[in-house]
Image (cartoon, rainbow, N blue to C red; front, side, top):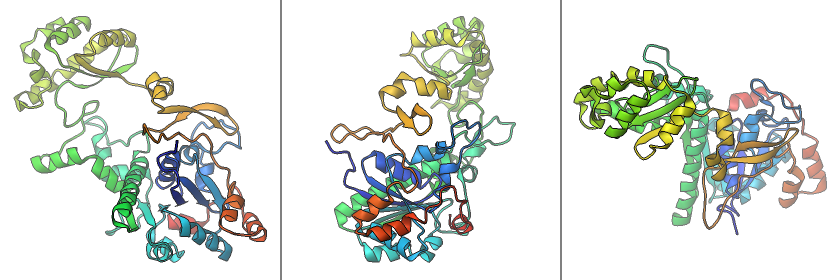
Length: 422
């Protein structure tokens, strides 16, 4: 049975996360993704992060997270032979993916107009940090800068503390999802209308799009939402994250009136259960009658006091027995996620063989198809592992292959030219 994108050919000329994660998703969907790396490799290969204990032959987790299922070819695209290999790849490709700056790609002869002359059906997908127009179209960016510019960092944290970024690279990963969606839309448009085209997205733009409800609410109401700590800024009432007696935590919303009384009894605050200020769901979570908004916020410290009167296991059992009437979820750490039966059953976490380390639980894929099932690809390419294979497919001879392979220089520092181009 074929995979969803089996037969699709993708050329990835990208570094870090936002561009390569697009290729990683397409590869999981069955596309043939050729990752074009410089002779020293994508710097992602050597970025380890904190507390890294893996052996030297193990690529960094950032690289492993975005490069599964691809073929790697190591090229110096500034040489005649390197450029010719890349052009032949483009000639037969359906998709070209990059997160280098457009003017840099154009200087290298890899702009959209230059590649479309060779392959008019090409879908040319390019992402940058802040958008391809405007005064900051060429401003350098990494994930956190998209977060703070989009406004989301201003919504995270306690009201009386400084803004905070999320503890994951949601700017880069959401940017990758946005570019993937745009590329798939362009491929559908090619089937419908017979044209290839350039699609442009940015991490900043997708982060703004992700906050459409909150931004639009602020615009229409004329009142800016503000951060509310463990509570959503646009969800009034008692729903929020609360700490238990042994340091665990739940996000919880008590909806039914009878179960509210039971919650208060179990949590040791029966007097609050009888308090007429909060004796109905509408008073506790005023989603339509906003007379109760400020009053409902006064319930939060009482909820917090109740939750601290019982352990995590006690609350888990209490909530499980009333799951039809209570919205709840224990706050997971990464160990919890990697062992979660729900994640394992759905393929969100899968076991992969990591070079130098062995089998480990790794992030899988979120998309499932009943007639063309995809699979989370288990392997990660070594630098230039497929150079000879890909060049042979493109019609190059042994001498040309040897010339390109001789240029490979693993762990060579990223050139200043490539740093400027991103």
